[in-house]
Length: 341
Image (cartoon, rainbow, N blue to C red; front, side, top):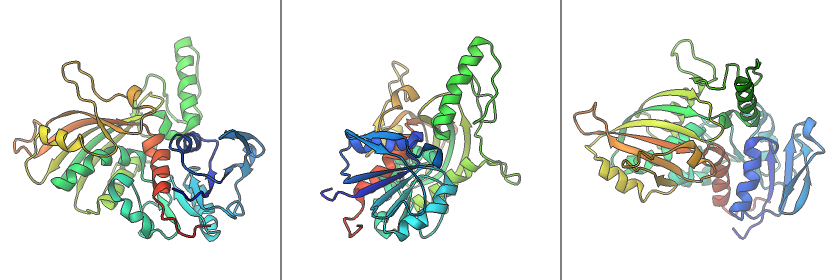
């Protein structure tokens, strides 16, 4: 980009906010001026950006005057409240929350899949759920060559998906557990240290699916533009600080082999194959953390499907990067250099 936009970050003090800044630096994203926005309790504090101390301002409806791109990662309620003001001021909003994902007038974009939708925006572009991104980046290139009819996946989601406070709570609760001290959780309402539990979003009493699972189902159909794809998903929180994992089994319309899948994924953007059977070395959060790519391994025939149409695999991706900040910055890089200012 030769164009240098004025960029605002709403939620700059959060885990994703910090990754916005780090990702812009690492990718040399051009910024003429940065506005750091957060809640009133953070106003007046400072952050470092490219050798400059930026004073954090309180997020208000007047925060976006002169802003070209507004990156939001402060929760759905904040996005719903302040995004319209940002758009009215002339900014393009790239939103990491769930606020606008299923709005038919808002593009839901993973650049490796549907970057063409960016030009259709009416002021707001939504970043998908991190679990959906992690699964769909490797599934899409397969889907393009041999339509995927059905997906069954289970997620192993890190604390990073619930923000910086949840990451800190996992650390502190683990210390307390090892010390034999009691610990009262404040962020995650269940014991986190050395524990695994159903994702801490609300359960639909009728379907039994939680909010995270419902997001994955709906967002996959929107991004793939395929309302017929069958999806079953179980989302689980695990005591890992950063990077989500997923076990995925998918069924294609035509027979498919593991060798075909490896060949497709070896050329797929945003994918790195980590699949060493001899050493029993496959995608892990410790390797995915800090990486831009989705790591894919354990690629194998689904032995429960004698027809040869199904493959199982295991993936891992950094929720704060490809699952959030990186995906948003990739969208910003592809924004048309229109008269945004």
